[in-house]
Image 1 (cartoon, rainbow, N blue to C red):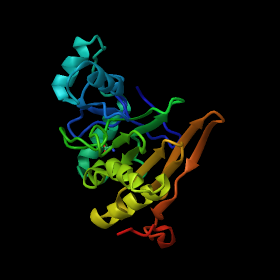
Image 2 (tube, protein in one colour; image 1 turned 180 degrees about the vertical axis):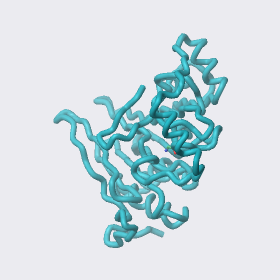
Image 3 (cartoon, helix red, strand yellow; image 1 turned 90 degrees about the vertical axis):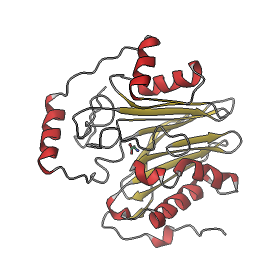
Image 4 (cartoon, rainbow, N blue to C red; image 1 turned 90 degrees about the horizontal axis):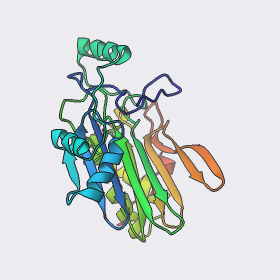
Length: 268
Ligand code: GLY
């Protein structure tokens, strides 16, 4: 699957940018608010890794399968597995990257195209999901936050859910989605919880001027929160009224200056 973005960049999936060995590997996860969860990491050659993650949840006693084992499970379950060779553009970008071999994902271009979703049905059941090919030119074997329950996504009945996109290492190091849900449990709104997590990340994970993380949260009343490290994070809301696009507020402007006025006071 190839998604071409309006800025000419590619989004995630088999047509996304490969790792530094020229291999596209995919991560995905799904979680329901009753704590059922499934995920796959480092899987190759499947078009819909998030469906495979759902099958891990529904058809195995496990919560996570990785690499060759995840691919074998896909085959056993009748999912088509086919690894297409890199197309001309993927190969050209990879060859160009190898000339310098410098790992420095470009903010808002190479590091926040993970597709992460929160869904709430009419009966009040919440589900969260993430799917990604991970960061462009990552080390082979690198796994980001997206398939890690609690980091890239989390949902808890009666509280709400949260999902993350962006530099997975920053999210893993702050256990982003679970932290947001726990802050909501303690009384913060989805917006306040998103802002608090991003400010905590900036304090704890150095180099925030050079990375992007965007976070979304929703409670069971349908209230939405969104915040990002850097300006430029957009997200969609779909409800009975239709689909709308929104630009999230952010802690840092693209020139790196902190929007201090937006900082949420940390509670003791
Ligand atoms: N958030 C996607 C990744 O870091 O792989």
